[in-house]
Length: 162
Ligand SMILES: [Zn+2]
Image (tube, rainbow, N blue to C red):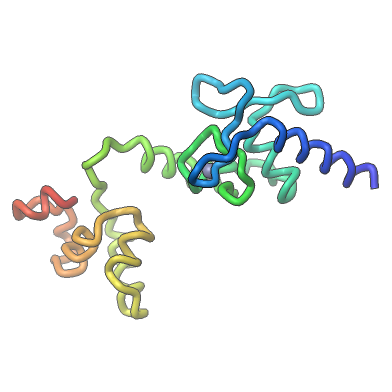
């Protein structure tokens, strides 16, 4: 019972310190660290607000797991925008998000295999593209190109799309 109340109190504290953005993000209104994550005092410690939010709205974070943002907004503490990932997911995520605009990543051979199998399962190019976070044209090019041609640079259109 006390545990439930404690969780509820923390939830109320989080709700009191956020502002809901147009996109539904719960933007942290207290201290924001230099790396962009919101911070709060919790249990006598200074911790990441989004991690506390995850724990009090969902469940405890298993050891070694990271809390990642679907919304790409580090200030956001909306539990619906948070998901658990491994260290690897987290760094992939960061690499994906720190990528300069306009330069899409090429897919790895493994991803191309996965894309092909998604295509065989009947997914559309744009759905597969969304899954990998690349352009539809990029998927189109990959799936119609020889397996070793994943640079998307052999033609002008490929270079600009991927
Ligand atoms: Zn968000």
